[in-house]
Amino acid sequence: MRGAKSAKWVAGAIVVALAATACGGGSDSGTDAKGEVDPNGIYSIEVGEPEKLLHTGDTMESNGSIVMDGLFSRLVDYKADGSLEMINAESVESTDSKTWTVKLKKGWTFHDGTPVTAKSYVDAWNWNANVTNAQGLASWFADIKGFDALHPEKEGAKPTAEAMTGLKVVDDTTFTIELNNAVPYFAHKLAYVVFAPLPESFYKDPKAAGEKPVGNGPYKFESWDHKKQIKIVRYDDYKGPNKAKNGGVVFKNYTTLEAAYEDLKSGNVDVLRQIAPKDLPVYRQDLGDRAVDQAYSAIQTMAIAFYADQWKKPKLVDPKVIQGLSMAIDRNTITKTVLQGTREPATGWVAKGVVGYQPNAAGDVTTFDPAKAKELIKAGGGVPGNAISIQFNADGGHKEWVDAVCNSITQSTGVKCTGDSKPDFQADLTARKSKQVKSIYRSGWVLDYPVNANFISDLFRTGAAGNQGDFTNKALDAKIAAADSAATLDDSVKQYQAIEKDLVNLMPSIPLWYYKVNAGFSEKVSGVQYGQDGDPILTGVEVRK
Image (cartoon, rainbow, N blue to C red; front, side, top):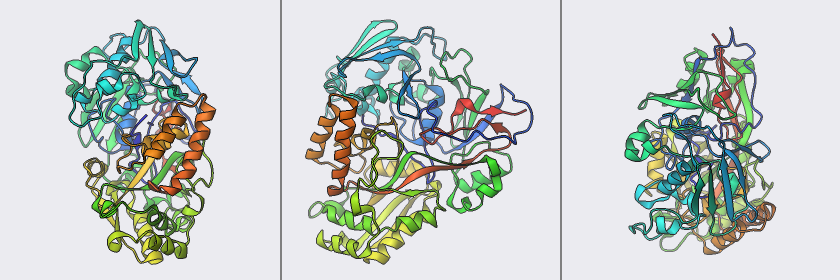
């Protein structure tokens, strides 16, 4: 996903969400689908209820993101190799990585028929960035000149301007972006939904627009029956390269992955994003060539809630303690047994398939070594209270591995470890954002743009929207600022690689494993592919009569 995202928080043990055209391999099976293709056919996907209203500036988790990907197109998207594809933009260019010129393709319209113009982008970005509007993704605009006036850092302060000075409308199809400093990967960030345009109608009633979004994407909104389903239908006047090959999508809410899988087998849902741990041993046999097993760019970690009394009183926890907890986790056994080989133990904080990924970035800290684990915890002053809890959402298929991780930690170190289950992803995110996590929380992160900065700056920089554990380190912030203003993308990537290797001395989180898509689809559909972000590519699915 995606500056300061909170990119897309991963809801499930086996999945996530983002760019509709970014194909990371995928399964193109569906060879046993029966009947001719119905170009107007509607198909269904398993999801959960989105956390919030469907606002481009506040949708930062996978249940809402997959819907937004159908409704809103951005200036650019990215390909599997990390290169950019122009979508609503004709071009995005810069000679110095500080001042960017965007030219739009002509003829694009919103779903209400009004034109998509340069002003549509500039106004949307200013609204999303304005602190008054309380959008969770506002910090994604922090690179742009004038952001501080629109979004003052001091809590409770009001904006002193109505627009960022770095945004200028040149004409209907051209606008410029001036950044505070050079950011060589800025064009990649524009693939994230927070940078989508908004129609004039949005500003008349933003709350109503969040219930019934008007976008510029391949699908238009039709209905939202809360906690049951959301329906979007093909927008026939869409001008983008990724036109829908179907008539629309129904996002069906499920409270458990097990129930969704049973519905898939009985033909009551067409596409799954994930399979529950209980069904992993049998789903390939059940589904045959409709079973999906594919890597994608996401990582599972355990993030520390540094604001919790446990970690900050009487003094901030020593990183050696977190290192010890990490070395007490037998990742190899857990991924092979509990997760049925559907995960690969992580050796760093950046997901595979991302520009700048490097193996073994964390050194020995992700190696299972009970003796060393106990030694480090003791050297760091011990775990306060000699007990930890791991918060997770019960609807995401996490309980089994959380129990296994806790057993590994307790058996290796004597530290008591328990799971802290929240009923669903909404409740889990609410506890994180209201700073109610007691100790540690399960954190899953999928790429917003395929550069290693997205897995470091957007999670560990002070104040970043994805930094929900309140980790802060001034020296790290300075290194991130230097990497962001590097002369070239290659230089920036190399600086972030060095930063990642130094994270072992800070331990803002504990890397667990790299994600894979383990999913499946029904006999009713074909052409099902999954992107580098792990989500099914909505527009490419074909429905059979």
